[in-house]
Length: 498
Image (cartoon, rainbow, N blue to C red; front, side):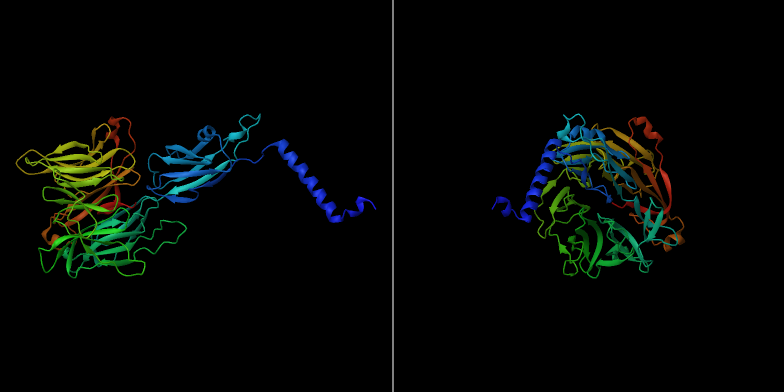
């Protein structure tokens, strides 16, 4: 009996498969690696981004020739940025926020495989095209027209759509958008009572979803956050992370009981309504929550104190006795614009940094109404007034841009004399500045019937909204060519949605 008799059919199949696989493995070895490089993941694919989104990543199937990828990466429209690598993952970090209301494409072709450089015909990447888009350019304001007077209005500049968010029986006093743009925190009083000291704190939905794949709540859903039964709600601020509200309150039964309170901006996970807690500290004036959302800057006595957001805040985290007011913080909290009040009734604007720098930026005989740091460039935008010469006390408001690298000041626009009730707001992408021009009511009869007033108590007849483009300018002389555009809207207190 021969050995062939012991070879079963199954053995013959196994031997044949082994021989076939051996031949295939040999061919693969001889041919080399033939896997074509490709983009496996694009982190912003079909996503909506905002000013807080600063970087995207591309993950490749194979190690890539870095220079060929960087040379062939195209973004349309262009977005300046810098590249970093970690293995097969490339991160592109934007130098400035992406302009809002824009669709983008990321394209990559002709990039080479890292390990095929020495071959006669290097392997190139499969052509890749990714897409993403930015949020619409959306503004908020308090309407002054007869139909919607005193109501909060959302206007989408990209789609030219208008939504009235609040009911007719409420008159808006102030508002702050949540960082995701889905809700607005606002204070308002009843149109019937017209009592500015009876304001309550509410939230209202915008009808916008921060996540495009998630359906948005219907616009105009109002919820009461804080009533006015025992305390008057005077001013409030919303933390940058949208989690904490700080309210300046006064006890109705005891006018001497006056101070700051803080509370969560949203109900607890169990659905229980949030309750405010008293910030135990010395009485203060104007206040602003710090960028890290953990403290509040308060004007106290002859200086500015940084108080922790906890019940016992008698020990400030910091105290700056030479400054009386914090006008603005930079987004990362490393810089602050602060006001110094001088004995000769002038005011100085200082840049104060966490590295100990205290740089005087300007001095004015008028007022420093408001300032905002630009997240897209080292620029501080300020609304100031200058006291005009003459026997009559009159202030001239104007907008100025201050370069925080060269310290150069560039006037942008001069507003009519006597108009102090101007409010400005810088867009999240740094490309536009909103401001209003309020017209006070001069007719005593009409003034008595007006439900809207300025910060200094003047009845408002009407108000126009203006948009000042802030395109990058290399030649300072070209700044004179920028002209504000009046929007076809009647309102005041304009604010961009984040």
